[in-house]
Length: 637
Image 1 (spheres, rainbow, N blue to C red):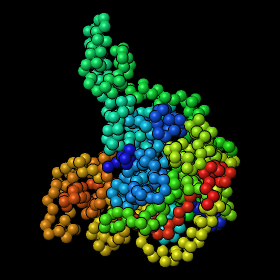
Image 2 (cartoon, one colour):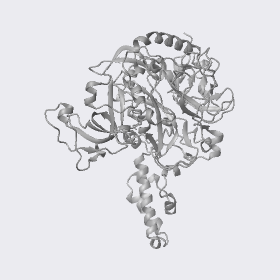
Image 3 (spheres, rainbow, N blue to C red):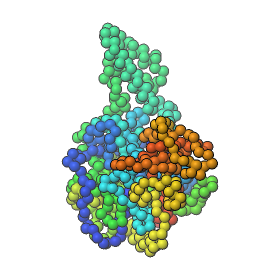
Image 4 (cartoon, rainbow, N blue to C red):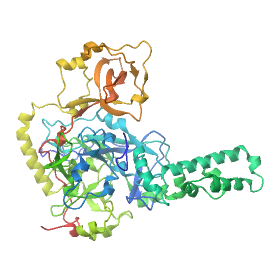
């Protein structure tokens, strides 16, 4: 279930209100770095592999132990029914290379935003684009529980915008606090390679098998196994293999006669003397030594990727914002902003037939992604900047007390090929220029203090559209105030979940579902003597259920599923646990879990009912200034 779709299976850039009331223009946040954190922990630099699809990747700036968070939290953006919406659109087709870098929505718990199965997708910034081409080594994966518990565990405690009173609830993604976690120890200078999921690996096997120079993870795993086994044999029988060429002769026999897979054979060393030193090490490192860079190289050729941390914006009604983790001097790079090139019409959202789940020709709006993209009024192109923390940077509303302290410029780093800035729109498409070749930087326009909120000017067209939207929205707030509460607000309140019995007298809104994060295969029989509630009374069943209750076991393979809450148990000083009924098949079979923790449950909006998908939601790109936007990309019609 988890991972990147097609290739990978596995802001809150909330915008500001236009109110000029209150807060000072420069406010320092408490979310600043300790002395130990002042050293940059992750860098963006040129990808190590020549065949990498994306020109940049991410490298560790310090040593990381196994099973710890690496990098700062990212933002996930759901792309509603993407594959249905881009199928057969007018104009240039949606670039399949981009599809290869989108993730399954379950990674950010956004799979309930639409109901068309695998057609919805998720885009994750920053770490979501690390190690773009690496079938042979994985050293990190998404920590699913971080986004699942985003309203419970963030420091300071995250608050939520409420669509009934906050206009920008309809303009931002609620899927924040997406964190990458190491799966093994990673030393400073090493490239980060996220696990893309089993389905990603399987989808690549056939194409890799047909390319004699391309190696799959299975090839690397088998070769590493052979090397480790022979190294152990050499160690165990030192005296035997010390005579003459015996070690080499046996190795030649294994490589040339025992190993039948040509690709595995190519990965093995020629000399037996190389085997012991290669044992226990990833083969990819020996085949591609640049996956480990010196810190001098990263500091001179790369860009620090953890200058920004998330926090509650100083701008009323803006939600989350980006703050300086350390002091930044005028002219310094605040964040690298590698871009993905799209055509704006590819963000069109069409109505979906409720019965057939097929796309209709009725236009409903545009993808939420547009609010995080860069564009120009006279160009069909839009660009999504996927650098860490960028999508948390808020707009400094014109005429308010808030003043921008950063701006976009084109990067002069060696991982940006600026020649493509001269190609016009037609040439970019005709020559099939990669949608990942463009890179910008966000630079400080003045000295920025540690803990200060980072603000950007989103442009005149954005500012005017936003003011109009907010003014119109505020006129409707009196009627909105009687509307139903949304899932994000319930998650932020974080009260105990109501049992089915309690919901009879105090029901949740009809557009709200409760999901349990659960893996049936990982559960174990509950302790002897465990009793279940009276199902006949609670569920109004004709007969009491006799299924053995199960005990919840945390699992990385767990997924969110609908659940019925039968009973809550409260222990002093601990989070509540619940007895729940969870479906384990489409045939109406259930598992009864006796100790599901509060942290394994979450509210979700039913398909197409979340605030960001509401009719008339705000949509507008961030405007690239006239003196920065390439003239070749302007179509003056």
